Image 1 (cartoon, rainbow over the protein chains, first blue to last red):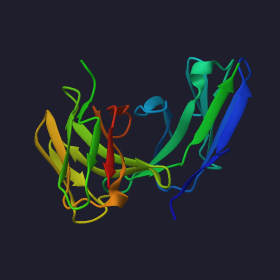
Image 2 (cartoon, rainbow over the protein chains, first blue to last red):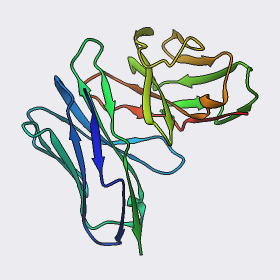
Image 3 (cartoon, helix red, strand yellow):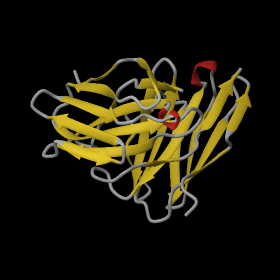
Image 4 (tube, rainbow over the protein chains, first blue to last red):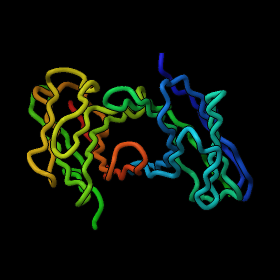
Length: 113
Length: 114
């Protein structure tokens, strides 16, 4: 069964600290993996898109890694800021007909001063 | 470009009424997606279009839901009749292509069915 699981479900960190969010998936055949940031009351915003051949991709203080062998991805946030408080959603696409999308339930991150 | 535009931003209706949600994608984007988000189920893809043609509607929950894209700049998601369990935030997104390209989301429509 194609699934995407994210951990932790929620996380509280102090401003300036680093953190890592996890995404494990069983989706096959794999097409790409996306990380989105969703602020409260707003639509998701894409952070990174990674294909099978990409191990690491950065977007400012956000760095995503992908291990296609173990079917794991992580999103590392460096020097967190209060504005990083949001929900982070992992989405994995499969290359079936129609290109299926599988969504994680998200990690809720709260950065406190 | 103003980004993806959705209307209304909030909709409150009574069970049994028809609800129509509207979306204007980013100009030049060939793909349009409709999503639903709830606390219980998270984000779900309902349907997506390529060049105004529905490609995959396997996420549409039941026959009460229908979506159309009469032209490249407009799409609707209709629920008839609406039920309380349809209460959710509905997002529209668009992208240049399907696989490698970023999807740009609208601000969403918060639907409450009483």
